[in-house]
Picture 1 (cartoon, rainbow, N blue to C red):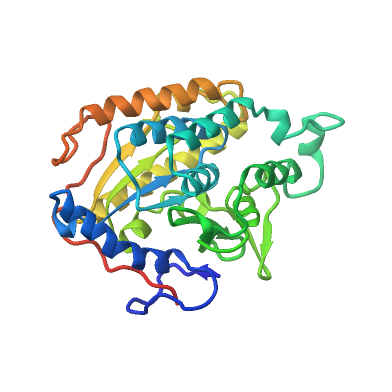
Picture 2 (cartoon, rainbow, N blue to C red):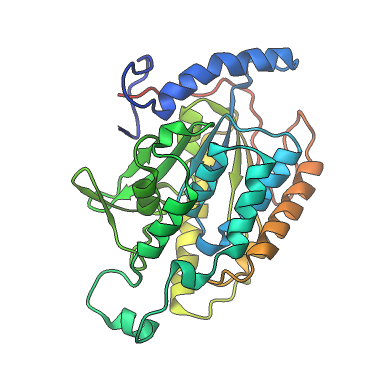
Length: 338
């Protein structure tokens, strides 16, 4: 059911049960190679991955980014997602179309803070004073997921999809590409202190952003030579206002994730082209403020469209606020399931 971090290479697709992302990509690669040749591109171009990072209520910006990518006919062979990026990623992986993104936009616009985080009877301050390891129950979020995710197993998505959760005891990433999407989405978004951890197969899991919010090395190990990273903020964090302690904590969390992203990009230099799509608009939206979702979708589209319009079709990106590495060597070996 679960993919480990470094599965053994060389094994073929499994013959029973749901196909993991490794199985599905083993089947995708020959088709992708044929399409590349038909389009006049190099056969060693490899696969294209979309990575959707976490970001809570700021995740609406990713819908605009995906719309801009789709309108320019930039297609993913597979999707990796964490936390809210996993929810957006699963929705798009089920139906990778502009119509699907229009529905996802409406869903974001119609969602409110109280719908996902119902107000406490005695106020939020009382919740923080309680003796328990989380502030908000996840019952409303679970109801929201069940109502809006139309598959019963993650292996049923049209595009191969994998999300990340973190083992609460060891800190190791758990990579989920099959099984119950509801439980997986609750696990990958279980922000410590805010939401309860999730039990799966006798272990407890928390937000995937703790262990691997932007799984760039994982994308490369699965055969990607072009990766689009969809952030819910900007690489440059200077000037961000922190009005509450929770915002300072989350901002520090974001800084750590971005530092790892830079290190992973450097580690893949010469092997993978990485395009980071970012948004200053999303960075300015406060924690749990869902009132600006429509604005974020529009800004995500506008900012991404501007970047894509300036991108040469076949040369590395040369934009001040985009990190890109030219793909001049074959991808890392394709990972296969245990």
